[in-house]
Image 1 (tube, rainbow, N blue to C red):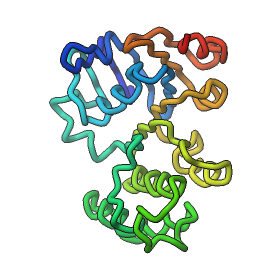
Image 2: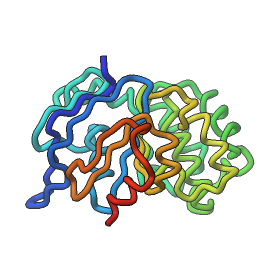
Image 3: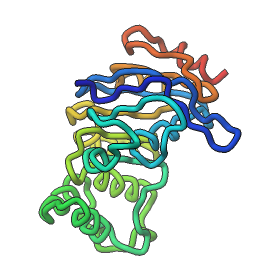
Image 4: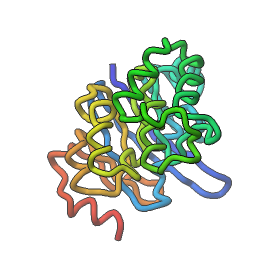
Length: 225
């Protein structure tokens, strides 16, 4: 059973068609990397897959469930890392993760494990608003993987991360995690290296859909022209 199956997906905001005619299938354990300029529809696609937005038209199946009708059966199986960290800035890293652990029925030792793995233990008791953007991004990664999701939805996952921090998050959200992943990227070379399948969006419409082995960095660059 495919992890994702989209057939003619469209999403409209008022008169604006943010997505139009997106069709693809992604098998379990594979990575789809989505490229496109700002406003091309990348984040909207992730939000539909995360059940945060309803499709306007088309068929969407995530982990074998139809959206939006079976969204309740999908939410606990998906991990979302969005542009906004989806964290409480007045709470500490540990408090944020403990709160989300309770929501998902996750045992508390998992929180301490992630804090240690991501190099956050020393400052995990401080309010998030006092931490650097890179540290907040690491907490957001921990929140996204806390409940061991089957599908990761990652919007520019390495934003604000230096090379050392990127190495820390790679085992959790990189290809080595073994999870099915949908990532957005503006970096042709890095994105292609992460991808099994490439989707290029231009003004909400698919302009490129191919196996990563069939795509060159120059093909990605064309999406931004």
